[in-house]
Amino acid sequence: MGVKSVVAEKLEKARSFADNVRAVYESAYSKATEVRKNGVTELIKGIQPMFRVAVEDSIHGAQVVLDEFNQSLADKAIPSFRKGAVSREQLEQKAKRAKVSEVKLATSRNKVVKKPQTKK
Image (tube, rainbow, N blue to C red; front, side, top):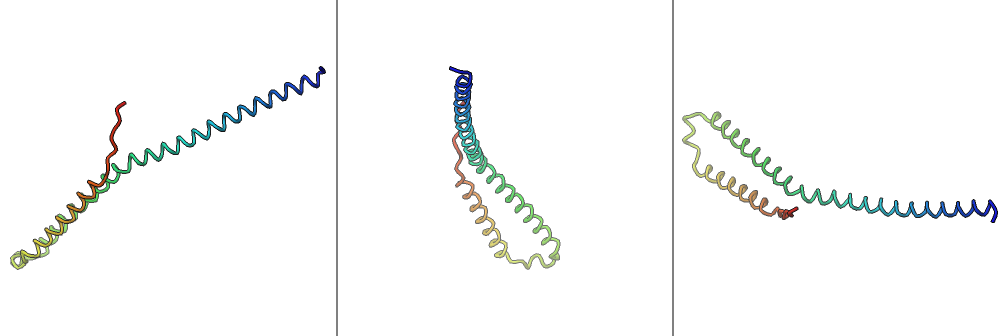
């Protein structure tokens, strides 16, 4: 065995070791990438129902504020001697429409499925 064959053997072992390290690294990187993608997906699935409820609550709150503001403007715009002329039927119809929209909002909130919490 000459120096050349010893060096060639050592180089081959080093190459084999490097290939094994590369394969293990690629496998670990692939698994880490997959876990990260699944983690983000799970995070989004967990946050989405809470986010939706928060947005719906904010929208409902804004609707209430705008309705009160609109009513205030209407009260100021109609002279006191004409307020009696506003028909009660129109007010009742508006109240019914408001109730229907509240029921729809409550129904849509109930459709949000909450994920059961696991004990750690």
